[in-house]
Image (cartoon, rainbow, N blue to C red; front, side):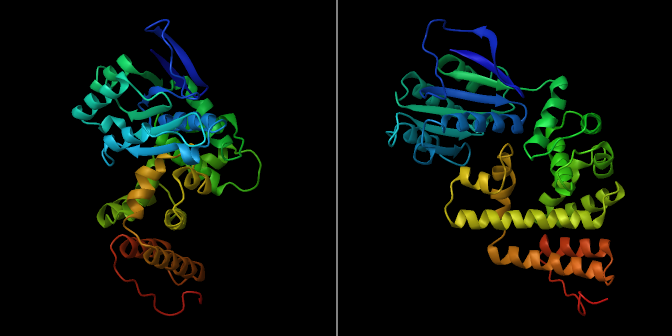
Length: 359
């Protein structure tokens, strides 16, 4: 058994090795228990997806992959799935996400499972923020394998470039440096900034410094995504406070409305895919969320539970009307933004007088 570390360049074997001579579990080949953990949710999710992508080259994961979530699903259901024989393959894979939420009793049960794991299954756990010496870490180090994903300050610029590359864009080195200095080591904020710049970037040319500076304010990027989240969960007061903060930081009301509309359209697509009973992997692919799978559990799933399809369509239609009102000059941008917040987050009816398409 042993430990590996992984950074933006991929897994790197750590110097520490235990149990020399024993058979090591290879997650690509199957067998045993692997814990992927670190301090950044994004990196943990990326590592998991890289492993599953490699596995999928040899195993049909549509029939041989089950995904569970600690704190929401029962551990026994996950272990039962791991004991199920694989279908038309030599291996079955079971993933338990957010394993840091496992109770002491569940960790004890997991330890018992690791003493005699099924020969044709691999159990992969993901966790964020585990403290050294935690019961889960101790259990896995004794009976499974650990892979810690981490990133150093010097590796962040490389990671930023890869985030742009995943969206089909090249980026100027000065723009990368600006993002690093403006947003520090907050990977969520950097991811949000890259998403924003990519959304507004026109053409296939390189993303330049001036373009990034005009769109990204220091420490502001976490705010616009948090604002959208507050609206989606119905927190009117916080959404209005964050709106004022965003406008004070220099965000344009029209740009904020555009982000809100984009998020609602994404929620609508998520709803449709769930209705079609698509797998999580299919949803990630359709919504282009590779490397950002955390959005499913942290945003789309809980927020989607608040909106049905009819309400989402009504909210999107309202935003279209508000945008037309702004373009015609009949509505002030900031007033339109307040209307959107009170209607979508608060459920209040907004009546636009006259034809919003006419000046």
